[in-house]
Image: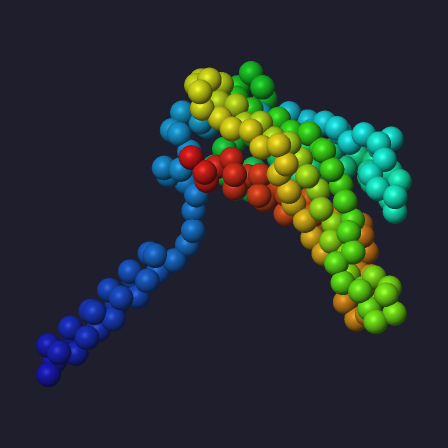
Length: 184
């Protein structure tokens, strides 16, 4: 009887140890090529032509001043948080991320019964280029990489376009880092 108790306790402790060992997520180890340690993030450029007409309803493209700076800062912050690649100066980098803001849109998503807009979707699109400085054949480009968020203009969950834009920038930065470190 005593042996059975010891075996049950040992099995329980082993099960807990294995479960604890399996808990956790990390992108470290194997997804990035081993020679990529440091990344230089070039300041994102504003490539939105604000004078170009878009449609009859919205004559000109939307633009928020310094949005490209906010994107650059958030992408840097997200790489630091992720830790897979160290953010470094250009001369110490193994790879470079270049980007340009190509679109910022606010679109109605849901209407009320009186045809007023209840919910909007804020969408930011950037073009990206990831360059491996040690291997010219390695790397990738994206022509329209998107981050977005939604917000309610009315009702109990009302929010502002500005706070939704901040969330969209955070979403975009998260997606950029995932693309850079996980898809190899």
